[in-house]
Length: 214
Image 1 (cartoon, rainbow, N blue to C red):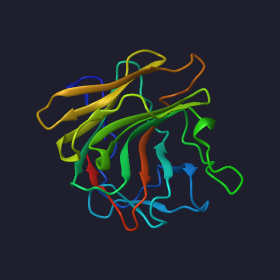
Image 2: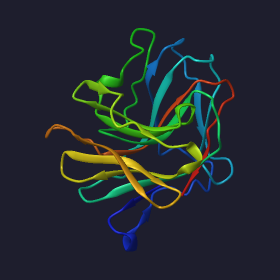
Image 3: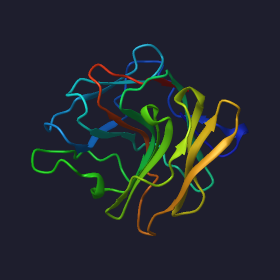
Image 4: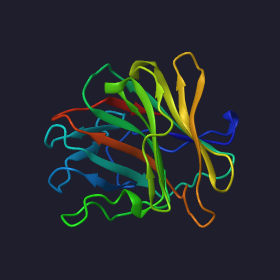
């Protein structure tokens, strides 16, 4: 995962070369099943993996963010991917947030997607699609920016900060062609971009979408 001003000045944020993920904070933002943590992240062999151990077809959306890097104007954060073909109902991708929030879904509130500003671009293999979700000032948008692409044809996901409040999100295919799914505008008071990391919604028992690497 790298934050780039230009190719010559790339900064690798994480190589996942060790098993320490303590820089990241896991926040459940939606849980349609029992309010318990079923998604786990690990980096056992030089790449990031996430798995699900809950009930099949119960949505559990999480953000896995770190706030020691900021996505500044003119920078792009990339996520290199290596997904295998699957029809399981699972999403995984890149995310930025206003903060690496520690609050998550509870027994009283299992939908906290609207409590912080965030943006995610992710692969949904079951629909052969790359999708975008945003939460802006309490308004969650999930249906915008859907582009068709098989999971094995996606080589990189990206989010670019084009201005203080504007971000573009999309993917680069295996032919090195860039596809912008959406451009979204956050409010001037938002601190969006102060945290970077991942988004996941896994629903298949023991399921994983493969791995991500630097």
